[in-house]
Image (cartoon, rainbow, N blue to C red; front, top):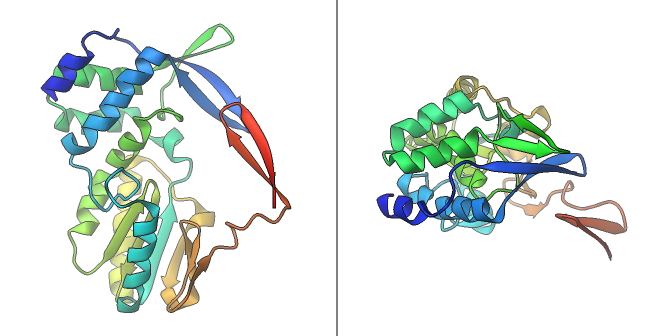
Length: 253
């Protein structure tokens, strides 16, 4: 971390962003100089923060295909499942809780100041500056790393228990258990961590029950024997709208 701090000394201190809305979502656009600093932090912090290898969306942790394959292979050994998602995850991350977590793991004072500035940023829109008091920025390379880190305590508690199969893909969480009692304990653990972190489950993306009933996860439909693409993944219209930044295009099936 010291080498990273030295590398960033040439950059200005203090982050600020501009704000634009795309399809109902607000993205914070960083200056090119700030974006480069944040990218360097995103590359260095996963190892420094000792993020769980079971958080599979982080580069080098397996990705989507490995997650789906591992989950499908594990199903025959378990009977029960809990899968859930954090409601408005990025927007719900509490600044006070996050900075207390980071204070325990970040020893370099320069890196610490950069992270504080990233969290407690100001946003300009239409000439008006607003201080952000809750949540982290969308469209920033550091945000996925911070989003993994925020739930690190949950990862550590469940992955250390050999009775469970556990994976997390950003805020998509899945736990497999062999007995109903083990499942209840896992549900209680997840709920306790969510309450402590002041985040909520998304009711429409939460399922608790028998694996044999089938469930959706990461765009796939899982059951005891079959693995298929989830119905939610299949777009019902003949045209699929693709958005990326300010660009919009339509692809015909």
